[in-house]
Length: 120
Image (cartoon, rainbow, N blue to C red; front, side):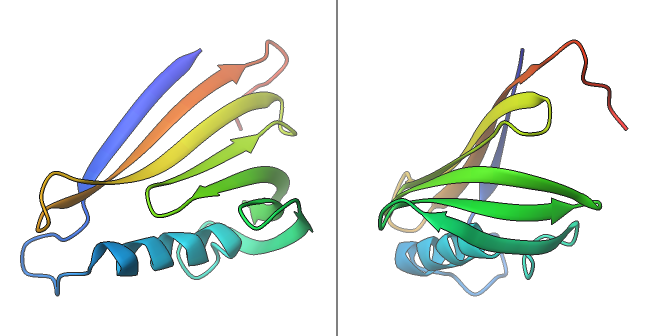
């Protein structure tokens, strides 16, 4: 099992500040179609809509196809889980505000690697 966390400023110095709503809209768009946001993802589409806030998407990363379950929890959190690649991973993106002017985005990942899985 492993755990990692990355925290970044949502409004870095020198950038045009985005509101919490604007940041959420961008994260939500990325959840539905990550291609414009993640260079390694060459295809991404919703394949099964469970509800307004839960859906499955298919993403192609490095030529490999993955199915991920996505949970939207507006306007604070998006959770993803992937189980079809020999691992059972859960990662979340959280938009937090320590103040109205300082927003952060934290990505946490918890994963389990099965013995048969080998990195490529």
